[in-house]
Amino acid sequence: MGGQACVLYGAAEFSRDTDIVTVADADNLRRLQAAVKELRADRIAVPPFERRFLEAGHAVHFRCQLPGAEGIRLDVMSKIRGLPDFTVLWDRRTTLETGGETIEVLSLPDLVAAKKTQRDKDWPMITRLVEAHYAQHLDVTDETVIRFWLRELRSPAILIDVARSAPTVCESLLHARPLLQHAVAGSEELLKATLREEEDADRSRE
Image 1 (cartoon, rainbow, N blue to C red):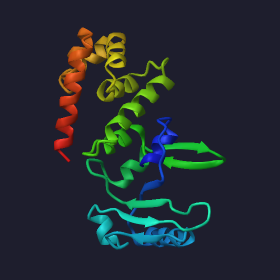
Image 2: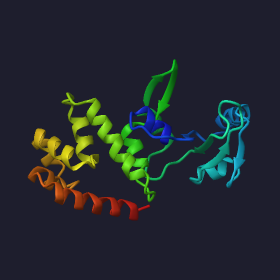
Image 3: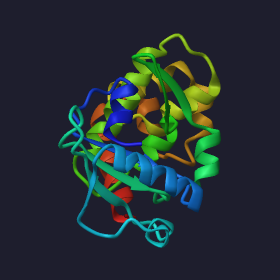
């Protein structure tokens, strides 16, 4: 659900950590503890690896020592700010195959939502994630996908192209994202300014 998920979605990023979200029940945490032990991972920083802290929304951090994974940081959490509980996230996950392995990844809309933080590095990643999805699905006509692009694209030129290619869908979203009016008008400069204002507003809700 972090940098490694961004890599899997095609928004290349060098990442030396792996972020996961998990169910914080007793049985699952025992399995996770066994996996942490297999990785020879030491807990770093705070809080302790306890269910009550995960359920309170904290992340627990580990540093792996197993050869081949040494130095990699593992961040574990069971709740993500602004997103529903694990059951919902799991139901709408993306399943990817890579290197002969099956990996369950946070859905792209959920990953984008999770990246809307106060951290400077996350906002360019949102741009790359949605740009990569757009580039991979240029021929898509599914309205759900188009609505996702119109809600989340942060690239003025591409946003203008999508707005012009789907004017009816764009008009239906003007109330939810007023800056789309500038995409309809083809004004890149106004879009740049209002995208920055939108980002500032999202950051302030952190």
